Image 1 (tube, each protein chain N blue to C red):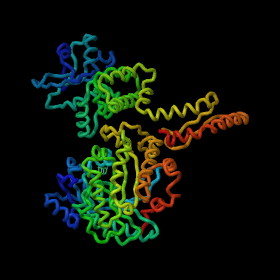
Image 2 (image 1 turned 180 degrees about the horizontal axis):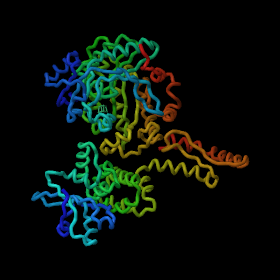
Image 3 (image 1 turned 90 degrees about the horizontal axis):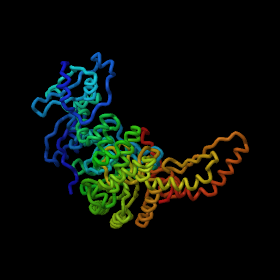
Image 4 (image 1 turned 30 degrees about the horizontal axis):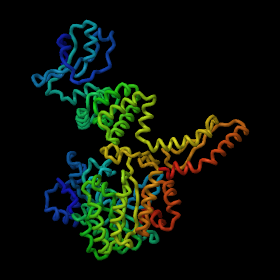
Length: 270
Length: 355
Ligand code: SF4
């Protein structure tokens, strides 16, 4: 049942989750009391009452000098933490079992990762995979992670954690790597190179051979993706036969040097 | 050595109950309680896992073509499902990506498969038909209990062009040794570096135990095959695999019919289910079939090394499993269909052809 509660009393109730929602209802709607009732979890003497979400909303209502706020109280028999979480994220899955698995997994995460998941900036699977990264490292990476797209964030965290494990880094070394990366001009690329040194070496070998010949020619030669296969692709545009001749000459020059490099790149370089 | 986990619970379908294999299994297991179900759907959700044994007879297509891999050369192997699932617990097991929530299933009536193989054999009398039961689980893990391989071996032993391969990481061969007519049946062992066996292949038999079992099988008259699969790259991999190759020298080389090589590969879905094992921190890249493999030059280098070491040991064909045209060319200088020693292995058998 929805009821009203004095704002003073409400603002004394701590939030259930350590992170805060970002979204807030527009001011003109708030003034008309158009907002979802704030869900409260009343656990009686089992550990105090909690606000499932709404802390930011309460702050805003305070600013608007609202006296009483709409709330919906849930008793601890009525709702579980998992359900509270679903309420908080607004994400519900029709399969009950799935919800509870997901929640158990969510509980395993350290707070900054929980926050990323709850804000839908990171998928739960990735968060679980990297959950053993020391907290200090996640905290250093966090501001940078915020600047990445969803998929870049996933890739970055996975790669970082793989390097952390592969190189058996301790926390101090992990922090040093995190600092190095966040100060790099291209953190993701740099991390990728650290994680895939051989692939990076193949790319370098390739560019060292091809770029000097093709630079400024408008011809593009692409190796097979990840050097898997042995088919290189040539692309260029031309409008007249003399342009075509010129391109052909350049390619002729490239063909004189490229065989050993192709062999090295696709067959037995390492 | 017992490598199988005794199932926590057993479900049997009514038509399977009276099959000799099921009666035999129940006897061996000490007549445990079991429940009857019409189909696997009736097994409660909480029992849908590899601690549960589901015994049924086969419904549907009995012989399949090995699924192979898009853009990769397939050795035209045919497969039969006898045992679906496995409890050995290899960390890289492909079945993790799709069998997590399924019971260990035994198709306890191999007679439809035997009929199908017989009809294929007479349809293609000039082709070597290689067929195995180790695609969906270990061929011999549960076999001492159900004895299905015995029925299979005996059922096709008179067919000169059928090569039935029973592939295992166990030592479970002794129940097969006294079969008088073995035909072209082969006992095949997956082999790996000792470290990989110890750390990544769960409760499988040790390399030494597998070789000893291979010797017993050879002495009893079986031909043998070996599969270095998955070949894993780790610091010191060459020395470690050399040890296994060295142990393989104990096996009479004229008994070896073929050896296959396949480096570690996995789908993205499987990767998500694998724990972070050290071998996963090598560099894997997506290939044309969507599976992740070591970089191509690294694979070629590894295969060349194996080929060199193993060729000193046997004249049997040593072929690559699920590899690309370019890797074949890099390792052998050509494609298997054009090489005499591989022609039989890579010849296509259209298993859908009707009798
Ligand atoms: S033996 Fe084969 S089927 Fe069994 S767990 Fe290992 S890889 Fe999987």
